[in-house]
Length: 74
Image (cartoon, rainbow, N blue to C red; front, side):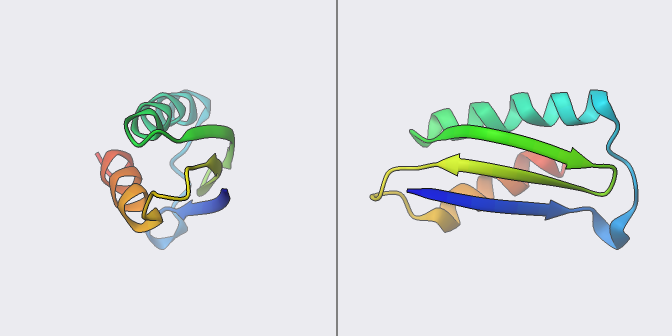
């Protein structure tokens, strides 16, 4: 199963540069691996990122989203 997620910065502040996006890609990939999911594609703009994730049907997507938001907020 696939899910398309979009994470937006607070007040749509433009804080994501190329380096920040690459760090997020690493963090998101690690979280997905912990949940037996796969980060298929990721792209972003200065104020948001798009994720395409392939995940197993047994996974509650809310758990994955909470973990992804947790690592992205640090």
